[in-house]
Image 1 (tube, one colour):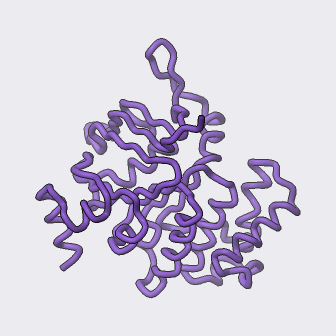
Image 2 (cartoon, helix red, strand yellow):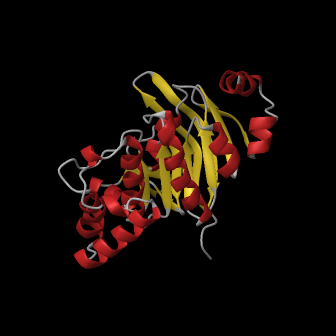
Length: 256
């Protein structure tokens, strides 16, 4: 029977020197669901996301993706860090889209999307090209296949970045404030692509300040502050009827 939880965090701590950024995070993300993480700057949201694919090493606790312990193997109750090669293999199942688009500037849009499936998964160039064109069609950019990133708007570059991540056919997509670097009029086109992914059943963990998107798409909203999860629940519970005064204060600054 497949694992019904795509992401499980058990008492996850993360410190940078003396600075504790994550303080005992417990989180469960069901497969096929969308979880949006909101909270003030510096609350640990992005760090948590980066720990999920072992871009950051956790200080304590356990993180699982689809039932597999991330970044470590466990033997006799002790954790041993896996090799970078093994960590890279785990990451092939986890797509990540950052605030900045991180496209290869010297490659065309099409080449950007084809690269990882060919190099990492051994997909043939022909199959990778077909899949890349299908994805560009989905994100409304098939006509930009031969363009270079510098010739695209920020919103277009971010849509390409999403297509590039999806091309690897990940089990899980992580989004780290994917619209925060965009001009306001370009935000909607990126959110629309994310909505279509959600509608297709992609498991998504999204750090966002787009409250409207969270309200419309999320199955669960998690509010973080100072390295802890203050409260979590459905969008209606957290966004319309938050119980904790810190959540109330945060939302009042956004919604006024």
